[in-house]
Image 1 (cartoon, rainbow, N blue to C red):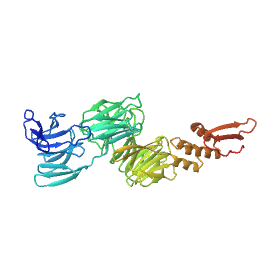
Image 2 (tube, rainbow, N blue to C red):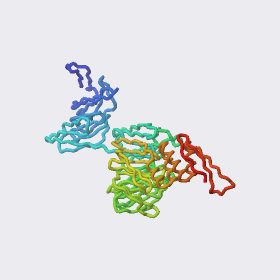
Image 3 (cartoon, one colour):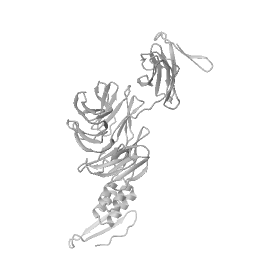
Image 4 (cartoon, rainbow, N blue to C red):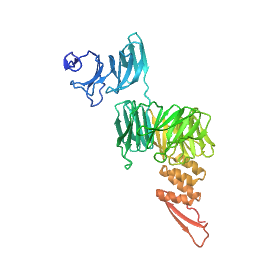
Length: 491
């Protein structure tokens, strides 16, 4: 029986459980109340059960079997997790609705008491033999990114898919511990303790956020990394890669000479995608899911931490264990340049010669072999698309708009007007477009100047080519809509 009383000791509610579970109640705990939530109380009894009740006495959710006599139950500050301990000599972590997530600590005697430090992830335990212990829980980021779709774990048991451009979100409730997430094109794979579930998206609707369950692989897998392709799941287990069909049939297996540190899907035809693999011994491989033989791209002296390949697949950027970003030409195996203070790297998906890397509290943008342009930014770069840079900071992903002005001016300083125009198309300010048009005109690159004028409607250009004069004799007249420029003399 549970009696709920006010501050004066007057009984307000009585919850009689004698007809349901006639076992002594050993611990109860109120769930921290969030806005517009009901008052919930967690009840642990020596019938080895965990139950939840509303203030009126109505049971919420299903009753959970624990398999041991619980001695104490305690909520985290925000009510997102539960902490239980007892006769199994362990302290275990549960979801807010009683799903077992994992073991925090094991001791040699009963654990009689457990408490969570307010607004933190520190846990204190008291044991039968007099031991008092303190633990710090660290929740790893479990996530996956494909272009502008980002999937991440929330509250340990849910998966949220976020469209980084429109900021739309959809939540998938798994009701189990989410161990790994992988996303690629229209596929989403989620690894749970005893299965891998695969969801698919409507390919005909590019803006759809409705994922539906399409496959289940009912098997427990031990893996370090997980990636999904159009028709395959690839599992990484130390030095071993396994390729499974979506029905769970193992199709191929690759055994490496060193530990696998990084793996990424780099695209390809459906069912024949390529994987970029980095090893601890510095070897970088390309593997196709329909081919049993890996292709060695290059070998460097230091261990690989992060990898990315350029748009045309001719260059590769590597971040090694010394936090150095090294860029190679894959055709000649030549080291093009290297930059220090890098923790992650990403090529621009719309420009062959532009990449960015993060490290030391700065974002670094590099075009060709020009000097690096940097600006303050916290977090890790995970993607670079046009003028948008995707950054992961403090378990949150954000899309940062970065004008490409600095690299555009680097090209203009070297009179590379066509290349500057390509960079400007990624995203620059109106003033940058005006400077590009003027520099191209002064540099007599009339073709680029005309493109700028027609694209941005900044200049009106009329080219008069006289048939009586040689082709090199060109008359150019122009005027600016926003300001006046000196005319270029007629040649």
